[in-house]
Image (cartoon, rainbow, N blue to C red; front, side):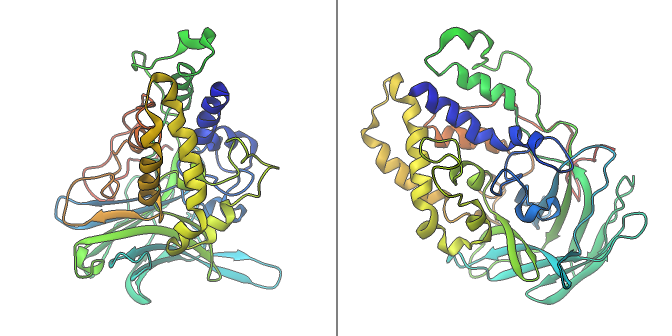
Length: 385
């Protein structure tokens, strides 16, 4: 049974990475929040609508930087664009990308940053607009795929970038599976385990790109009576929400269908689409039970090592209320990062592994991105071309 649970954890945390090879799309793998719809597909069946990651951090000048990535799994030589609309039988429905901000801690958005794009020109450049609560904040254009010089749009104290960048998510799938192999009851494969990270590891996302929307703006455009905010991303088609994301890996790890006992495909209905189309305000009511069930499995991994499980229930309950609602909490006045916001260089996998396994698994043995991040706007690393 213990070996089964270990395998379930491995697959659950990295399931999208394995699954990418089985689904269509611009690349061969995924994780974080990549391909998080039922059947390991992109929400809405469209990689342009699939949010892979969002970020929020304090720039050196005190401004707030927000970033939202889509078109995950893009290989060098591919030139995806942002969606301007999705054709239907009778018409084309407009697509919007959103960064939603709650500034009074009620899990409802108070500031809505809406990004829209026009049809691409022959070189792939698109007209873009950024609106704050419906009012035009900035108009500009995207950077052409493969262009050496980035286009930085500036208006009203706001900077905006949209275009191809290196995928900043870093994760070693093989290393993570090897670490877990050392924890199960089968000792025949322990020789290849590197719990102490004594061997070089490979970033599974090395060489892959995403399409990024990056905004830098004065925090006063986001905050309310305090400097603290909650941020999440969303994509909509014709006003209907298709995908959303706050913290990394919430939907991919905690929502069925997952390979946990009793939650596999065919045993329970998938809740991934319902989560993607839902709102943070309702997360605890609708999905807290799923998060608690998954945490019980994860916390049980260290029982055989002598851990006293008597305090697990209390810890699990507290952690479930941290993970939900799925909002990336961020104090705009502080430079500390994850769990305060999320900077590009934050090793969120290591941070989350330690939390959700009660310290049993501490690292996947990859601690940095494959390319150096820029020290200045738009901050994400140069894409692979």
